[in-house]
Amino acid sequence: MSRPAITIVLTGFTLAAAGSLMAQERGTLNPQPLPPLVNPTNPKTPARELFARKSEPLPLAARAIGSYVRGCLAGAVALPINGKTWQVMRLSRDRNWGHPDLIRFLERFAGKVPQFGWPDFS
Image 1 (cartoon, helix red, strand yellow):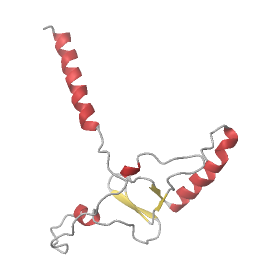
Image 2 (cartoon, one colour; image 1 turned 45 degrees about the vertical axis):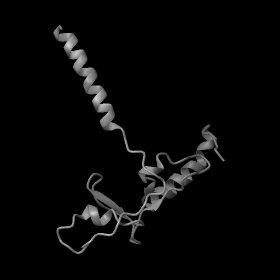
Image 3 (cartoon, helix red, strand yellow; image 1 turned 180 degrees about the vertical axis):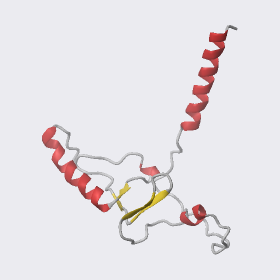
Image 4 (cartoon, one colour; image 1 turned 60 degrees about the vertical axis):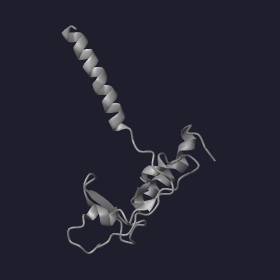
């Protein structure tokens, strides 16, 4: 086999493998709660295990803590799933949350876009 043919075959295998790795879990709209931890006060319990068992946000003032990749948003509110001019996608990923100011802005903005030709889904 020639060198270009080997390169093409290896590239094909790489893309096929990468495609399966990048596939996202479908998730569910009704996730089941995780079982309680045996010893949640143990200092060796990873934070991800503690946070994973919280089903609702804490009632804190809205603020960003940390960065996008290593942080969280306190006081977030959910963008409604359906609006007149929008629909939340990939609900199972639970990423329809934002700062209250951002959610208010999006709702106001969405109310103005029909005048520019954006369809009204209501």
